[in-house]
Amino acid sequence: MSYVLATTESRVRWYTFAVGPNTKAGSFELLEVLDLKQVPCFPDKAAAKQVALALGLNAWRYVKI
Image 1 (cartoon, helix red, strand yellow):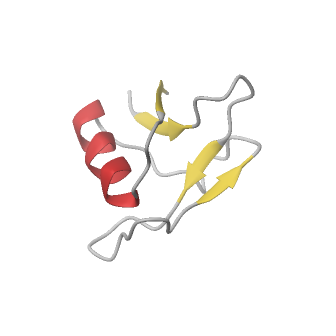
Image 2 (cartoon, one colour):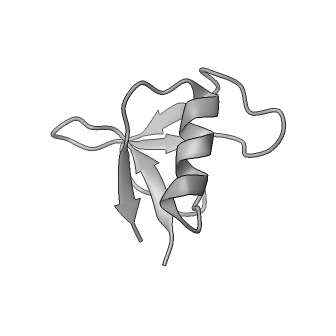
Image 3 (tube, helix red, strand yellow):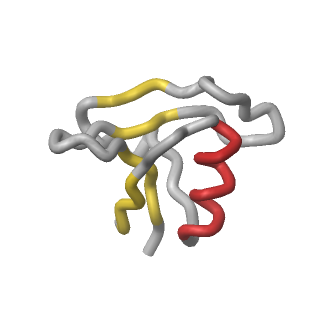
């Protein structure tokens, strides 16, 4: 089981971004369709939260895959 980051809107969109030491605030795109080849997956909520904070997200939703 893993987690992905999504928007908190009523129509959920998916955050896609490069994962690594160069992760910067605002360096993400939003996808309308969940494509697990493009959307990074994380082993737990703590790891997903670290990346969300690094991206500068103010609000996000965890989705368990």
